[in-house]
Every structure is written in structure tokens, then in C-alpha cells.
Length: 157
Length: 157
DNA sequence: TATTGTTATACTCTATAACTATA
DNA sequence: TATAGTTATAGAGTATAACAATA
Image 1: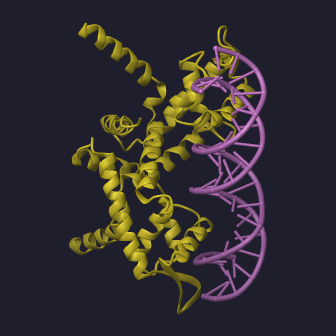
Image 2: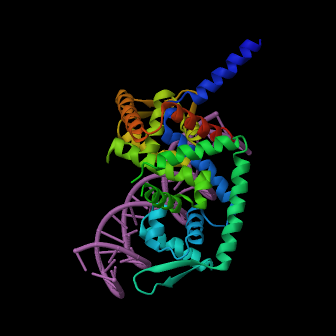
Image 3: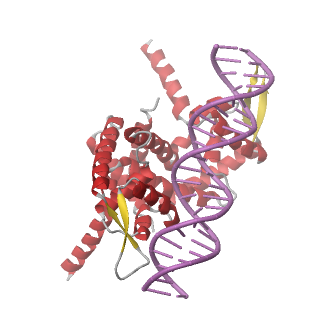
């Protein structure tokens, strides 16, 4: 009877998991990403920073006086797409666009004290949520995962 | 001199990689996903199937006579979002909406011969591209990655 | 000529809500 | 009442192309 029950479960599992799609890295990445992203939004709440805005703020806090062009390159998005993100961060009072003596084209992005505090707070909350979401992964597995994802990313030009 | 050159490279690498963001699974997932997705689109060309449409076709080929509701659930999207995807596949002649005797609400999705052929062809091309893109990962690493991603996915309700 | 920030625009993906026809 | 498919709509996210100011 244990055998028959096992086979029933196995059959169910096969029907659920056997899809060709499961073999594609891309499909698995997408599905996993959606889960983690939803968790991210839950962590920071309805009026909290979105993932893109959070990432931009993170880099501005860490690399004060970075220019928008450099930031866009770091984030892997277009300069034009960054404008709205910086507008939002400036609107929230988390950073300032400052002029740079010697090159009046660029606008160095400088985090405010409030911005730094908000980032530290958000960072802690996202970390906490992510840890809880991924509690069925060991620390070693998480490290392996990050390593493999960065290996994929390392091929980018 | 080798030492000084090494330290310069190390310093550059540190500046590039030291970001807090790199510690987040979500950020790494997103960046890796974008790379693989772009590769996917390159694999199937400008007028080829998009990732979502490919995924839907895959499941219809594999689970013939699946209903739209079941398919949407399998793909993790809303019923309403699936309509345009099925429209496109039907427009390309890759599947047919067929009535089901006994329940006139549902429309069983049946792949055409052309649809099956197109899927097999696309599947092979995507696989080939993905293998090339990820050639710096060993087969074992790819298996590990898929396993870890599915572990994340397994927590979903 | 090239680069920085910007605007305008369009396209993809996705969700929510409401409708219809069935059950 | 509930479900399947559908429509309408809106909001992210992103890219492309063009522009003004500056180098």
C-alpha cells in the first residue's frame, strides 16, 4: 500500500514537474524572480521603494557623487529610464542633484542623511524578508546560488 | 610589477562588485534573467515567439486539451493575460480552441501539427543558444542552479 | 563631434474589475 | 452562486530617437 501511495504521489509530481520548460534556465529564473520580487514589494509595503528605485538609491548611497550616466550603466538600464527613478528619489528627499565644477553637463547624485537612513532601513527589511522567504535554503546554498548567477552575469559586455 | 598590476585589477573589481546589491538574491536573479531573456529573443529572432508565448505553446504541446484556466495557473499568470497569448498562437496556426462536450464554458487547447513542429524547432534553438550563453557553467553547475531555483519556486502557494 | 541629462513616445508584461455564457 | 473565457483599462518597466547644453 505504501508502494501504491508512493506511485500515486510520484505520478502527480511527474505531471506537475515533467514539463519541458523546467529544463530551461530562463524559465526557472523568471519564475523564481517573480516570487522574490513579490516578496520584495511586500517587504517595503505599498508606498515603499520599488526594486529599481531601491537599487538606484543603494548605489547612490554607496557611490556618492556618481553621475546619472555611470549609474545607469551600473544598473544595466538606459540613461533615459533613470530620470524618473532619480526624480522619485529626489522627490522623497533621499538625494540631491548637484552640479560639478569643471563639467557643467553632469549632475552628481548625493544622498541626503534621510536618504541614507531610509536606505539602511529598507536594506534591513528586504534582507529580513528575503531570509525568511528563502529559509528552506541553507546559507551555503544561497551563496552557491549567488555565485552561479554572478557567473551568468560575468559574461555580459 | 605583476603585483601592482594585480592590485589595480583587484581594486577595479572591488569597485565594480562590492555593492550591497550583490548580496541580494533578488537583484542577482533579475540581472541574470535579463541576460538569459535577451539571449532567448536572439535565439528565436525578431518575428519569433516571445518567452511567454513559447512557454504557453510548450505546455499545450505537452498537455494537449488543457483548458485556458489550467494553463494560466500553470504559467503563474491571470486568465485574462493568457487570452492575447492564445490569440497569437491561434493566429499563427499553432493551436486551435476546441469545444468540450459536457461543459460548454471551457475551450480545450489543441496543438496543430504545425504548432508541434514549430515548438520542437524553437525548443532546439533556444536550448542551443542557452547552452552557448552558459558555456562557462558546467553541466553540474547548471543542474545545481536549476535545483536551487526550483527550491525557491517550491515554496509558492 | 561626442557626451549628459532630458523629453516624447511606444511597446511589452501584468493585474484588476467587470461582462457573458454557461454550470 | 461559481466558473471559463473575454474585454477594457491602467500601471509598471523598458527602449529608441531626438533635443539642448556643454565638452
